[in-house]
Length: 260
Image (tube, rainbow, N blue to C red; front, side, top):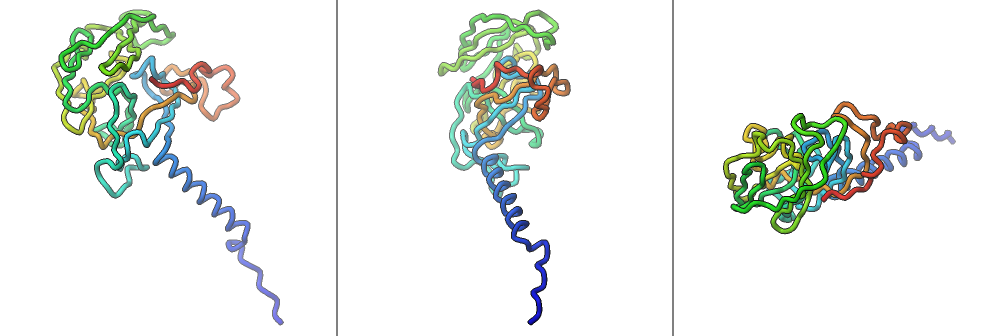
């Protein structure tokens, strides 16, 4: 009786199990990232002081339903949205930039379909009415974006519906603080940054943002889960994997901070 030939290495039970484990892990990660949660890193100061440069945030993908942009590289065999849920005014939203669908933006949803939006002397007006503004404690930081005034004036803004959040208003005479009236089309939204003088958003026709189609919404920002000290996008004291630097380079007070 002939001896049994040795099994090729690529058919070994250990290798097969290892490959199956990797495939299952990738499938689970794909499902979670596509349908449940996705992390994002904040590279700009447009949402100060709600979000700071370097913050890592968690976004819920199911908050507004799903579009092709919910999938990696926007690879999905459908258009529009499925299981669509209307976002609420005041939500902090991650979306695809309308003029460049490879770029993710994060702003606050200010205008719903049919709303009339206008900035007058630095005050946001919605449907002809100024929003409530209350002066808050100024925002101070070592490297501010505001060359006009230090510390930066901060206000508590309350939107129709009751959502209250802080905004920074560096220069009330800035180019985006007096605008024409915008009428939000059906199926679109009007987005603005909380750092009103340092945000490319729906107010600026040259920014490539403009009105944001419903299909471009990715999800709702929920909380900060990691925050290294950063001075700009390329100058952080620690990366998320540089654990040995964390003790001296982390904004611990921002861990698991809710995004309101």
